[in-house]
Image (cartoon, rainbow, N blue to C red; front, top):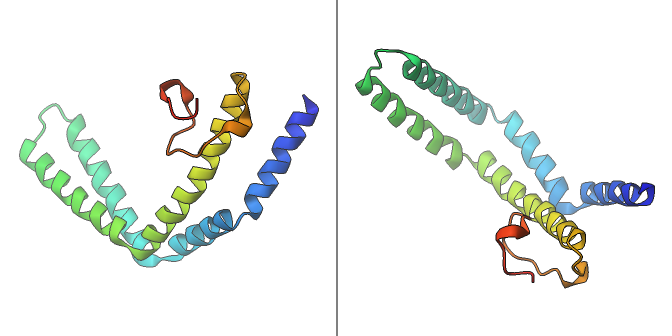
Length: 134
């Protein structure tokens, strides 16, 4: 068991050296430093809090909720259109793909399958609903 955990730690270190992980770290830092993006995220969070507050009221104002929902969708669209957010999402998707692949390989091995037979699919690592790797 100790050997397996040590191998997992080595895998973790290798992941942190991968160019896709390094790109994700840089994209995260750029997004954190992007004042426009951070302002939009703050605005989005305020709109979400306003929606939650209005929803919690016994006498909800449906017109107000519609207005707030339209506003939050508009702010969300601006967040997602931000170049720093787009770069972050692209980098995160690449790292998630690696992590999902690792999970799928480990899951295959835990089910008694040959991990060398892993084929990359766009999956979440949960083989229960997948017919692609078998």
